Image (cartoon, rainbow, N blue to C red; front, side, top):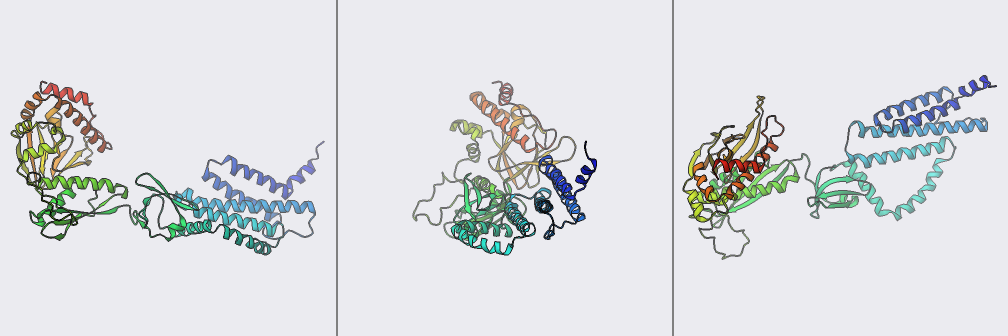
Length: 506
């Protein structure tokens, strides 16, 4: 028969209670709550507090040597209880350290420092077990291990340099995950990972550069993402001195104003930095939202510079270190040459690039000019235009109002010389997707439906190109305005082409 008295005495034994509590706590924290870090953290702390209260209530002090007159079996269970307590203490302290990453959601740049702290905690727990459980002289153990550490340090000198450099970099935090760094050896990339030995940079060409932490600690770093993500860009352009420098500055301000890739706050600037008999040199300064968009912004600014300079009859000058005596470009090759303005506009539009000279001249003869002042509305949203409007000079802003009545207005695009609008109403009878307002003095040339219809009857293939162009532009406007309700559904290119052919009786 069972002896209930012996069972009760065994259950009441503090060592048995400690072992049972340790087993329950280990299962709860390591198995049941394994996929729930927040609940696991709470359970771990509660387990440590309960274990501490249980030991102290039974006269067992984990950070003091055990009683010298204890029996061997009692000493065994007391030492086991102390080991469980010190292990739980280490786990609880590590849970507190890792809670910074869980609750504050800090990025992986804190992983190296976290691992260092965790390692120190484990070393401290092991030394405490050696001192208070096995009564070993910790000082002698440390002195003996110091000799081994010196030998290992000499053998791993390079690796240790990377490790300690990584610790220093993580403490100083000169950069973080996602920052763009420029090193002194012309390496530029985004930080994607930092570890004990190296920092990984992803370059603009999608190559992974692994830089040892010791090299990174000695290098001259430029953090392109600090103190804020926006990045400044400076470009220089040179024009032949055919007009006053102040007029050139106004043209370049229109270039910056018509850009959609740069930031308008702080305001971009244009300055004249040199003037001589051969050229006027201007400097354009602006910011982009992120260093990763620098290439895109430069490409757009160069394209807009060419278009605005061509519209203003400005000719690019040769670089200052070019070979002397090179002939200047002829007037026919210059933006301000003798070719008619209407023909120049048709040349700048890819849609009409394949027309013959006779066809371009016939179409140009139907074009008329319209001028608008700064702030004038060229066309209201929803208006059906019966003409194709080509921007000759200036900058215009395209905005879309939410049709649901919320009053939300979003910027869709900015128009520069060579851009056009009105093709939706001209070709399919659709209203304009947005309102167009002049940001500067604007000149546009108008191609009427009658003038374009005569050309399309001679060249029906233009209808296919117009259908494809219109469907792409509609899809692009939808993408920019997708956060608002009521955006029109883009039609397929074939459907738009069919409507064009029907409208022009092709």
